[in-house]
Length: 394
Image 1 (cartoon, one colour):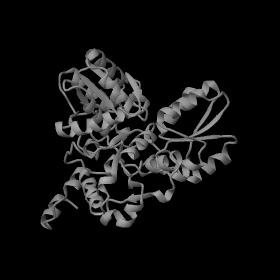
Image 2 (tube, helix red, strand yellow; image 1 turned 120 degrees about the vertical axis):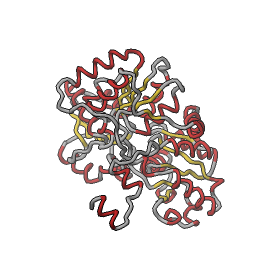
Image 3 (cartoon, helix red, strand yellow; image 1 turned 180 degrees about the vertical axis):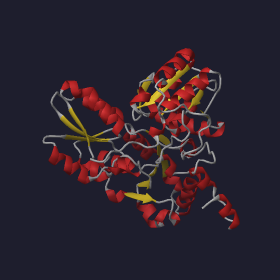
Image 4 (cartoon, helix red, strand yellow; image 1 turned 30 degrees about the horizontal axis):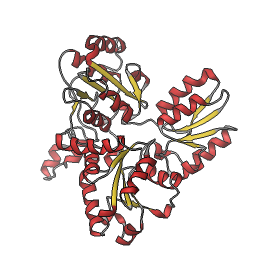
Protein backbone atom coordinates (compact mmCIF):
# COMPACT_ATOMS: atom_id res chain seq x y z
CA UNK A 1 0.00 0.00 0.00
CA UNK A 2 1.42 3.38 -0.99
CA UNK A 3 1.61 6.49 1.18
CA UNK A 4 -1.05 8.12 -1.01
CA UNK A 5 -3.39 5.17 -0.48
CA UNK A 6 -2.91 5.27 3.29
CA UNK A 7 -3.68 8.98 3.28
CA UNK A 8 -6.88 8.37 1.27
CA UNK A 9 -7.92 5.79 3.86
CA UNK A 10 -6.86 8.12 6.69
CA UNK A 11 -4.50 5.42 7.95
CA UNK A 12 -1.40 6.67 9.74
CA UNK A 13 1.65 4.40 10.04
CA UNK A 14 2.57 3.73 13.66
CA UNK A 15 5.94 4.93 15.04
CA UNK A 16 7.03 1.28 15.32
CA UNK A 17 6.12 0.59 11.70
CA UNK A 18 8.13 3.60 10.56
CA UNK A 19 11.01 2.53 12.76
CA UNK A 20 11.09 -0.96 11.30
CA UNK A 21 10.95 0.53 7.79
CA UNK A 22 14.02 2.60 8.60
CA UNK A 23 12.15 5.92 8.26
CA UNK A 24 12.45 7.03 11.84
CA UNK A 25 15.21 6.87 14.43
CA UNK A 26 14.96 5.85 18.07
CA UNK A 27 18.37 5.89 19.77
CA UNK A 28 16.92 4.18 22.86
CA UNK A 29 15.76 1.15 20.89
CA UNK A 30 17.61 -1.93 19.74
CA UNK A 31 15.49 -2.06 16.60
CA UNK A 32 16.86 -1.07 13.22
CA UNK A 33 17.18 2.65 12.62
CA UNK A 34 18.25 4.77 9.70
CA UNK A 35 21.99 5.03 9.09
CA UNK A 36 22.93 8.53 7.89
CA UNK A 37 25.63 9.15 5.31
CA UNK A 38 26.71 7.54 2.08
CA UNK A 39 28.35 4.16 2.57
CA UNK A 40 31.16 3.00 0.33
CA UNK A 41 30.24 0.14 -1.97
CA UNK A 42 30.73 -3.34 -0.58
CA UNK A 43 32.46 -4.20 -3.87
CA UNK A 44 35.07 -1.45 -3.46
CA UNK A 45 38.43 -3.30 -3.68
CA UNK A 46 40.09 -0.59 -1.59
CA UNK A 47 37.94 -1.01 1.55
CA UNK A 48 40.66 -2.73 3.58
CA UNK A 49 43.25 -0.13 2.57
CA UNK A 50 40.81 2.69 3.35
CA UNK A 51 40.07 1.30 6.82
CA UNK A 52 43.78 0.95 7.56
CA UNK A 53 44.53 4.48 6.35
CA UNK A 54 41.72 6.05 8.40
CA UNK A 55 42.69 4.10 11.51
CA UNK A 56 46.34 5.07 11.07
CA UNK A 57 45.40 8.73 10.64
CA UNK A 58 43.38 8.65 13.87
CA UNK A 59 46.19 6.92 15.77
CA UNK A 60 45.71 6.77 19.54
CA UNK A 61 42.55 8.87 19.27
CA UNK A 62 40.57 5.77 18.27
CA UNK A 63 40.15 2.41 19.99
CA UNK A 64 38.30 -0.27 18.04
CA UNK A 65 36.45 -3.02 19.92
CA UNK A 66 35.38 -6.23 18.19
CA UNK A 67 32.88 -8.66 19.65
CA UNK A 68 33.57 -12.37 19.14
CA UNK A 69 30.50 -12.70 16.90
CA UNK A 70 31.67 -10.13 14.37
CA UNK A 71 32.63 -10.92 10.79
CA UNK A 72 36.30 -11.65 10.10
CA UNK A 73 36.48 -8.64 7.78
CA UNK A 74 35.68 -6.42 10.78
CA UNK A 75 37.57 -8.33 13.49
CA UNK A 76 40.86 -7.77 11.66
CA UNK A 77 40.68 -4.07 12.60
CA UNK A 78 39.83 -4.60 16.28
CA UNK A 79 42.41 -3.50 18.84
CA UNK A 80 40.85 -5.97 21.28
CA UNK A 81 38.27 -8.74 20.95
CA UNK A 82 36.04 -10.25 23.60
CA UNK A 83 32.53 -10.53 24.98
CA UNK A 84 30.38 -7.48 25.65
CA UNK A 85 31.41 -6.76 29.24
CA UNK A 86 35.11 -7.40 28.68
CA UNK A 87 35.09 -4.95 25.78
CA UNK A 88 33.27 -2.26 27.77
CA UNK A 89 35.87 -2.57 30.54
CA UNK A 90 38.69 -2.49 28.00
CA UNK A 91 37.29 0.77 26.66
CA UNK A 92 37.18 2.28 30.15
CA UNK A 93 40.84 1.30 30.59
CA UNK A 94 41.84 3.47 27.60
CA UNK A 95 41.04 7.02 28.75
CA UNK A 96 43.42 8.50 26.17
CA UNK A 97 41.19 7.27 23.32
CA UNK A 98 38.82 10.04 22.27
CA UNK A 99 36.73 7.71 20.11
CA UNK A 100 35.58 4.20 21.03
CA UNK A 101 34.38 2.44 17.87
CA UNK A 102 32.32 -0.51 19.10
CA UNK A 103 31.89 -3.28 16.54
CA UNK A 104 29.09 -5.02 18.35
CA UNK A 105 25.46 -4.10 19.01
CA UNK A 106 23.56 -1.23 20.60
CA UNK A 107 23.43 -2.38 24.23
CA UNK A 108 27.17 -3.04 24.19
CA UNK A 109 27.89 0.48 22.99
CA UNK A 110 25.59 1.81 25.73
CA UNK A 111 27.54 -0.13 28.36
CA UNK A 112 30.79 1.28 27.00
CA UNK A 113 29.39 4.80 27.22
CA UNK A 114 28.30 4.19 30.82
CA UNK A 115 31.73 2.92 31.87
CA UNK A 116 33.91 5.39 29.95
CA UNK A 117 34.57 9.04 30.81
CA UNK A 118 32.46 11.95 29.61
CA UNK A 119 35.29 13.02 27.31
CA UNK A 120 35.18 9.76 25.37
CA UNK A 121 32.71 9.28 22.54
CA UNK A 122 31.32 5.84 21.72
CA UNK A 123 30.49 5.16 18.07
CA UNK A 124 28.41 2.30 16.67
CA UNK A 125 29.22 1.95 12.95
CA UNK A 126 25.64 0.93 12.10
CA UNK A 127 22.79 2.07 14.32
CA UNK A 128 20.73 -0.85 13.02
CA UNK A 129 23.02 -3.29 14.85
CA UNK A 130 20.72 -4.18 17.71
CA UNK A 131 19.92 -7.24 19.81
CA UNK A 132 16.58 -8.99 19.53
CA UNK A 133 16.90 -10.29 23.09
CA UNK A 134 17.53 -6.84 24.55
CA UNK A 135 14.54 -5.57 22.59
CA UNK A 136 12.26 -8.13 24.27
CA UNK A 137 12.19 -6.09 27.50
CA UNK A 138 11.28 -2.40 27.36
CA UNK A 139 11.31 0.00 30.28
CA UNK A 140 7.53 0.36 30.08
CA UNK A 141 6.98 -3.42 30.13
CA UNK A 142 9.29 -3.94 33.09
CA UNK A 143 7.64 -1.10 35.04
CA UNK A 144 4.28 -2.75 34.42
CA UNK A 145 5.72 -6.07 35.61
CA UNK A 146 6.86 -4.43 38.83
CA UNK A 147 3.31 -3.14 39.34
CA UNK A 148 2.04 -6.72 38.95
CA UNK A 149 4.56 -7.93 41.53
CA UNK A 150 3.48 -5.11 43.85
CA UNK A 151 -0.19 -6.02 43.49
CA UNK A 152 0.71 -9.64 44.28
CA UNK A 153 2.34 -8.40 47.48
CA UNK A 154 5.82 -9.70 46.68
CA UNK A 155 7.72 -6.76 45.16
CA UNK A 156 9.61 -6.14 48.40
CA UNK A 157 10.87 -9.73 48.30
CA UNK A 158 12.05 -9.55 44.70
CA UNK A 159 15.58 -8.60 43.59
CA UNK A 160 16.02 -7.89 39.87
CA UNK A 161 19.00 -9.46 38.13
CA UNK A 162 19.51 -8.36 34.55
CA UNK A 163 21.72 -9.97 31.97
CA UNK A 164 24.39 -7.79 30.39
CA UNK A 165 22.46 -8.25 27.13
CA UNK A 166 19.91 -5.59 28.06
CA UNK A 167 19.31 -1.94 27.31
CA UNK A 168 20.61 0.88 29.48
CA UNK A 169 17.01 1.51 30.59
CA UNK A 170 16.71 -2.03 31.95
CA UNK A 171 20.10 -1.78 33.66
CA UNK A 172 18.94 1.49 35.24
CA UNK A 173 15.69 -0.13 36.44
CA UNK A 174 17.79 -2.89 37.98
CA UNK A 175 20.05 -0.43 39.78
CA UNK A 176 17.13 1.64 41.02
CA UNK A 177 15.42 -1.43 42.51
CA UNK A 178 18.43 -2.81 44.35
CA UNK A 179 19.52 -5.38 41.79
CA UNK A 180 22.64 -6.27 39.88
CA UNK A 181 23.80 -7.08 36.37
CA UNK A 182 25.28 -10.44 35.42
CA UNK A 183 27.16 -11.99 32.54
CA UNK A 184 26.90 -15.57 31.34
CA UNK A 185 30.07 -16.37 33.27
CA UNK A 186 29.08 -14.90 36.66
CA UNK A 187 25.30 -15.52 36.65
CA UNK A 188 25.51 -17.96 39.57
CA UNK A 189 27.47 -15.49 41.70
CA UNK A 190 24.94 -12.79 40.87
CA UNK A 191 22.02 -15.04 41.82
CA UNK A 192 23.71 -16.17 45.03
CA UNK A 193 24.08 -12.50 45.96
CA UNK A 194 20.50 -11.71 44.99
CA UNK A 195 19.07 -14.47 47.16
CA UNK A 196 21.03 -13.07 50.09
CA UNK A 197 19.16 -9.79 49.56
CA UNK A 198 15.67 -11.18 48.96
CA UNK A 199 13.54 -14.29 48.59
CA UNK A 200 12.85 -14.10 44.86
CA UNK A 201 14.57 -12.96 41.67
CA UNK A 202 13.17 -11.26 38.60
CA UNK A 203 15.59 -12.34 35.87
CA UNK A 204 15.76 -10.18 32.75
CA UNK A 205 15.63 -10.56 29.76
CA UNK A 206 16.87 -14.09 28.90
CA UNK A 207 14.73 -16.82 30.40
CA UNK A 208 17.15 -19.59 29.38
CA UNK A 209 20.23 -18.24 31.14
CA UNK A 210 18.14 -17.66 34.26
CA UNK A 211 16.58 -21.12 34.20
CA UNK A 212 19.81 -22.93 33.39
CA UNK A 213 21.72 -21.16 36.14
CA UNK A 214 19.00 -21.75 38.74
CA UNK A 215 18.40 -25.42 37.92
CA UNK A 216 21.75 -26.65 36.64
CA UNK A 217 24.10 -24.63 38.84
CA UNK A 218 22.05 -23.90 41.97
CA UNK A 219 19.98 -27.06 42.39
CA UNK A 220 16.55 -25.50 42.03
CA UNK A 221 13.75 -27.33 40.28
CA UNK A 222 11.93 -26.33 37.13
CA UNK A 223 8.87 -25.84 39.33
CA UNK A 224 10.71 -23.06 41.17
CA UNK A 225 10.68 -21.07 37.92
CA UNK A 226 7.79 -19.27 36.25
CA UNK A 227 7.88 -17.29 32.98
CA UNK A 228 6.50 -13.76 32.88
CA UNK A 229 5.10 -12.95 29.44
CA UNK A 230 4.89 -9.15 28.99
CA UNK A 231 2.36 -9.59 26.19
CA UNK A 232 -0.23 -11.20 28.46
CA UNK A 233 -2.29 -9.61 31.27
CA UNK A 234 -0.39 -9.94 34.55
CA UNK A 235 2.36 -11.69 32.61
CA UNK A 236 0.10 -14.69 32.11
CA UNK A 237 0.59 -15.62 35.78
CA UNK A 238 -1.68 -15.72 38.80
CA UNK A 239 -0.75 -14.03 42.06
CA UNK A 240 -0.47 -17.50 43.59
CA UNK A 241 2.02 -18.61 40.92
CA UNK A 242 4.12 -15.51 41.51
CA UNK A 243 4.09 -16.01 45.26
CA UNK A 244 5.18 -19.64 44.89
CA UNK A 245 8.07 -18.97 42.52
CA UNK A 246 11.70 -18.36 43.39
CA UNK A 247 12.73 -17.37 39.87
CA UNK A 248 10.48 -15.10 37.83
CA UNK A 249 11.93 -15.39 34.34
CA UNK A 250 11.26 -12.77 31.70
CA UNK A 251 10.00 -14.27 28.44
CA UNK A 252 13.02 -13.38 26.33
CA UNK A 253 15.61 -15.35 24.45
CA UNK A 254 18.54 -15.17 22.06
CA UNK A 255 17.44 -15.71 18.47
CA UNK A 256 20.72 -17.51 17.71
CA UNK A 257 21.09 -19.79 20.72
CA UNK A 258 17.36 -20.46 20.85
CA UNK A 259 17.57 -22.25 17.50
CA UNK A 260 19.57 -25.17 18.88
CA UNK A 261 17.42 -28.16 19.82
CA UNK A 262 17.71 -31.54 21.48
CA UNK A 263 17.48 -33.01 17.98
CA UNK A 264 20.60 -31.01 17.09
CA UNK A 265 22.48 -32.66 19.95
CA UNK A 266 21.25 -36.16 19.14
CA UNK A 267 21.98 -35.73 15.45
CA UNK A 268 25.57 -34.52 15.92
CA UNK A 269 26.32 -37.42 18.27
CA UNK A 270 25.20 -39.82 15.54
CA UNK A 271 27.20 -38.03 12.83
CA UNK A 272 30.45 -37.49 14.76
CA UNK A 273 31.57 -40.43 16.87
CA UNK A 274 33.06 -39.36 20.23
CA UNK A 275 32.08 -35.71 19.83
CA UNK A 276 32.06 -33.34 22.81
CA UNK A 277 29.01 -31.08 22.82
CA UNK A 278 29.80 -27.62 24.18
CA UNK A 279 27.01 -25.02 24.34
CA UNK A 280 26.32 -21.53 25.60
CA UNK A 281 23.96 -21.19 28.62
CA UNK A 282 21.59 -19.05 26.50
CA UNK A 283 20.50 -22.33 24.87
CA UNK A 284 17.25 -24.03 25.88
CA UNK A 285 17.27 -26.06 29.07
CA UNK A 286 16.93 -29.42 27.32
CA UNK A 287 19.93 -28.59 25.12
CA UNK A 288 22.05 -27.58 28.09
CA UNK A 289 21.00 -30.72 29.99
CA UNK A 290 22.06 -32.92 27.06
CA UNK A 291 25.41 -31.17 26.47
CA UNK A 292 28.77 -32.32 27.83
CA UNK A 293 29.99 -28.82 28.66
CA UNK A 294 28.22 -25.50 29.17
CA UNK A 295 29.75 -22.06 29.43
CA UNK A 296 30.13 -18.48 28.28
CA UNK A 297 31.86 -17.39 25.10
CA UNK A 298 35.16 -16.99 26.95
CA UNK A 299 34.66 -20.42 28.56
CA UNK A 300 34.13 -21.97 25.12
CA UNK A 301 37.35 -20.44 23.79
CA UNK A 302 39.39 -21.54 26.81
CA UNK A 303 37.93 -25.07 26.69
CA UNK A 304 39.02 -25.46 23.09
CA UNK A 305 42.44 -24.03 23.86
CA UNK A 306 42.90 -26.70 26.54
CA UNK A 307 41.41 -29.53 24.48
CA UNK A 308 43.76 -32.34 23.39
CA UNK A 309 44.80 -32.75 19.77
CA UNK A 310 42.48 -35.06 17.88
CA UNK A 311 39.44 -34.24 20.01
CA UNK A 312 36.09 -33.56 18.34
CA UNK A 313 33.74 -30.76 19.30
CA UNK A 314 30.28 -29.55 18.34
CA UNK A 315 29.74 -25.96 19.46
CA UNK A 316 26.37 -24.37 20.15
CA UNK A 317 26.97 -20.66 19.71
CA UNK A 318 27.18 -18.03 16.95
CA UNK A 319 28.58 -19.27 13.64
CA UNK A 320 31.18 -16.53 13.03
CA UNK A 321 32.94 -17.50 16.26
CA UNK A 322 32.63 -21.26 15.65
CA UNK A 323 34.09 -20.95 12.16
CA UNK A 324 36.94 -18.77 13.44
CA UNK A 325 37.72 -21.30 16.18
CA UNK A 326 37.59 -24.20 13.71
CA UNK A 327 40.17 -22.49 11.51
CA UNK A 328 42.33 -21.54 14.48
CA UNK A 329 42.56 -25.02 15.97
CA UNK A 330 42.58 -27.11 12.78
CA UNK A 331 46.43 -27.10 12.66
CA UNK A 332 46.37 -28.69 16.14
CA UNK A 333 44.22 -31.56 14.89
CA UNK A 334 41.08 -30.45 16.72
CA UNK A 335 37.85 -31.05 14.80
CA UNK A 336 35.31 -28.30 15.52
CA UNK A 337 31.81 -28.34 14.03
CA UNK A 338 28.72 -26.16 14.33
CA UNK A 339 26.09 -27.88 16.48
CA UNK A 340 23.24 -27.43 14.02
CA UNK A 341 23.05 -28.18 10.30
CA UNK A 342 21.36 -24.81 9.74
CA UNK A 343 23.58 -21.76 9.27
CA UNK A 344 22.98 -19.44 12.19
CA UNK A 345 24.66 -16.04 12.14
CA UNK A 346 23.57 -13.27 14.48
CA UNK A 347 21.82 -11.17 11.84
CA UNK A 348 21.89 -7.90 13.77
CA UNK A 349 25.53 -8.29 14.82
CA UNK A 350 26.36 -8.90 11.17
CA UNK A 351 25.04 -5.48 10.23
CA UNK A 352 28.44 -4.15 11.22
CA UNK A 353 30.29 -4.80 7.98
CA UNK A 354 33.39 -3.37 6.35
CA UNK A 355 31.58 -0.54 4.48
CA UNK A 356 30.02 0.72 7.74
CA UNK A 357 33.35 0.50 9.57
CA UNK A 358 35.17 2.35 6.78
CA UNK A 359 32.49 5.05 6.74
CA UNK A 360 32.69 5.51 10.52
CA UNK A 361 36.50 5.61 10.63
CA UNK A 362 36.83 7.95 7.64
CA UNK A 363 34.20 10.28 9.09
CA UNK A 364 36.07 10.46 12.39
CA UNK A 365 39.37 10.98 10.58
CA UNK A 366 37.79 13.93 8.79
CA UNK A 367 36.61 15.40 12.09
CA UNK A 368 32.94 14.39 11.79
CA UNK A 369 31.43 12.53 14.74
CA UNK A 370 28.87 9.97 13.53
CA UNK A 371 26.52 7.47 15.17
CA UNK A 372 27.41 8.46 18.72
CA UNK A 373 25.78 6.35 21.43
CA UNK A 374 25.13 8.47 24.49
CA UNK A 375 23.17 7.46 27.59
CA UNK A 376 21.44 10.24 29.53
CA UNK A 377 22.87 11.06 32.94
CA UNK A 378 20.03 9.76 35.12
CA UNK A 379 19.86 6.45 33.27
CA UNK A 380 23.65 6.21 33.34
CA UNK A 381 23.80 6.79 37.10
CA UNK A 382 21.40 3.96 38.00
CA UNK A 383 22.77 1.62 35.32
CA UNK A 384 26.29 2.21 36.58
CA UNK A 385 25.10 1.44 40.11
CA UNK A 386 23.86 -1.97 38.94
CA UNK A 387 27.11 -2.62 37.06
CA UNK A 388 29.17 -1.64 40.09
CA UNK A 389 27.22 -4.11 42.22
CA UNK A 390 28.25 -6.79 39.75
CA UNK A 391 31.88 -5.70 39.91
CA UNK A 392 31.75 -5.97 43.70
CA UNK A 393 30.49 -9.56 43.65
CA UNK A 394 32.75 -11.95 45.58
